[in-house]
Length: 206
Image (cartoon, rainbow, N blue to C red; front, top):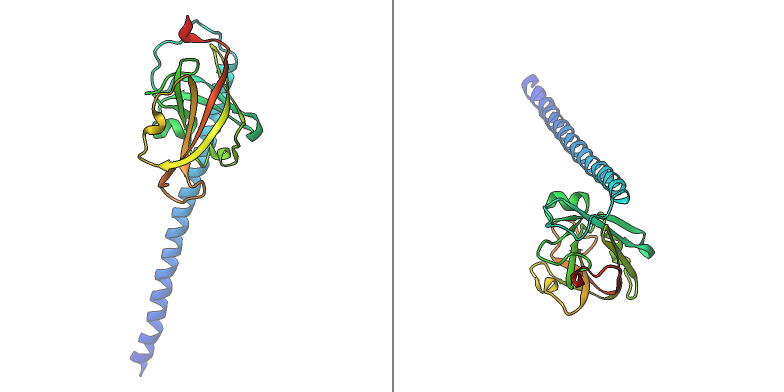
């Protein structure tokens, strides 16, 4: 009887120890994940503040040179959405974690064609979920400010590259993942297309 009684006591204790260990493990994983998220947010804000200061004090140096990945191009502003972020050459994961990325295969602001910018839906481009037709967008660069008005929005598949195709005239395309509240790798892309109004410094005409 003592042996049976001893066995019935040990099993619950072993189970409790297992669940206690599992809870500690999940807590540790959660703290690590929370710490990483905090690091990403702080790093992005620090990068934006540093590059913003450099950009505001930059001295124009003639037509733009050939850009390397990671070079700062300028700043995007959407006043109604209070969207303001530094634009960097490239669209790698590291770049998009810190800034809005200029897709290399597309022209630079002020050059005819379709300027394409990408940003994460949960950081810099999250305000785009409230974009409206007619909203003003400004791309500020050391070579001039370029004004655009939103003409259309649409949702496309993640593999749809047509949105990057060149266009007649001067256009701007903003791309982010969709749906905005989707968990994990989103299946679609939210695309904003805008047309330039007046080029403050038409680089291609020089």
